Length: 363
Ligand SMILES: [Zn+2]
Image: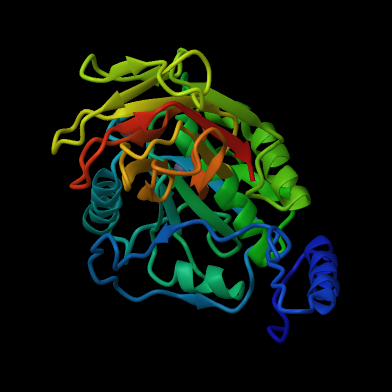
């Protein structure tokens, strides 16, 4: 039963394609399989030890696989604290409610997602089973589904408002991953009220479950992680750009992108130039920059990329390779209209740091 990992027919086919490509690679060329490796990549999931859970009481381990997912809302405040620390505090608080007030042996739900989109293990051992795609720990989230359904508590109250974009995107990605790991069909995603007389998960969220099922199915069909075809160029002259008046404006170099570009002295100050874009869906994006090069510009200009798994800094030598797109790399980005890249002044290297244009494309 556990001899081969549970893979959908589609990902099995993709695997075969990868083998074909690999066999053709010769002469030192290394071909990297991309989306073909796994249909739905594993999202970041914090374990009970990551958020500092209390030791549980006795738990019942089941050898059967879950055949459904049950969506809940926590009916707690619609917090605008999207930090990881807040998410961890939430998981800890829920465990306290369930153990102290309900007298349960541990958190009732298998997993929790915060309004910031952070995914966390709820009941101990849920994560190990999920990663193995084998068996489950009995839950205490929905009588009638505790021995067959993976329960997800989503932070907030969704009687009349909808979850945040971050929470929604994580819910879609995580449900798709659960479906893939256990071979659960997307049609088997339910709301708590489908099993008990309860308002949970709220009228507004419950009404979106058909959309959740279809977005999960799209991820299972399409390989997941790959955003739709998308490309945007953010020039310093456009509305997606922001910088303080400490940044000068120049037309000096003919290698500029657009009408002009911005420059500043390197200093240990938080005074970055920001490039903002409306990212259509969570996924991996290629990020490039365009700048005019000059021997007097900075040899290690810091570009900060606001990736969904944390900020990354890439240093670019702006003395060369000017007047064309230079890759900063491929990064996971969250959906939404936000700053994607910043050019920082905070560097010990000398010469102007230049902010001219950024291009973001589906990878
Ligand atoms: Zn519920």
